Image (cartoon, rainbow, N blue to C red):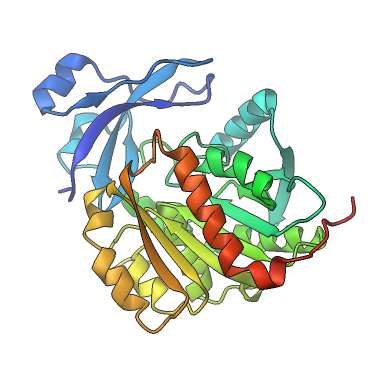
Amino acid sequence: MYSGSAVIYRTKQICQDRELYPISSDISAILGFSERSQQAQNCNFRRGIRAVRTGFPFLLTRQTGLAALLGLAIAGTTTASDIDREKRWAEQLQDQLVVGEPLRLTAEQQDFFALYTPAVGKLQRGGVILLHGLGAHPDWPDVISPLRKNLPEAGWSTLSIQLPIRPNQADFADYPPLFPAANMRISAAIRYLKKQGVRNIVLVGHSLGAAMGAYFLAQKAPDSEAVRAFVGIGMGHAPGTVAHTPDALAKITLPVLDVYGTQDLRGVLGSTKARADSQADNAGYRQLVITGADHFFRGLEATLVKRVSDWLNRTLSDAAAGTPAPSK
């Protein structure tokens, strides 16, 4: 059975994506869930279910339906990403892109999509590689898109990459096998930033993306030595899997910012002490709670961006000061 709670909410999707399972108010009433609605802006909102298992939200779709709510979803073991879904999202993102540049990076002979947004101004503090949450994309409206578009105003170039994803009907257990593939994509992103002349490289991950980032650093994956700091937003726990962030954090000696909200998921709130304990010997570790924030920091996006950029500026200021922007 699923640990944690489950809620229904409307999430802003790419307009053309119709994969989320529409849940009627009758079903939500039967299940006893609460619904949060937002006004549609520029594209339709599709209603879906997110169930919280081991502190990570994931989408339940038509295929999993109520069976998944009863804990009957099948856990897969494949290590392959859903490339067709990645391509579909990449095409849709490119069609509506306003801020940033679309890229195709390569990891292990497989192309993947990314969005690069250069820092604004003559000075560049460094580069931030953004790692989205479970089943999401590089311009996900919650957490990722606000950071991607606004950190460059503070002098931080952003490179938001498409992490490996599974089909909508996948369970959380389908994701840990993707962590090695995520490592290769993060390495490719680091190499890209280095080619742009970026010296201060930071990993910033949200939810499962934070777990993937922590795993990458803990495993000392190729090119990880170029990373100067790590920001984990909404880090959960998944004991017995590679997604268990306290285990990964225990092996990280870089400066770490651990961000969560007072209204965050149960798995995030319940593992705050374990995460802090795992970093007890790291003088560069800081745990930051944002009052009123939920797992997606809705309504507090500007606060999140400011707190993250302020920490980056302070933590890496000595190395970043006076670094000219790379020549084009």
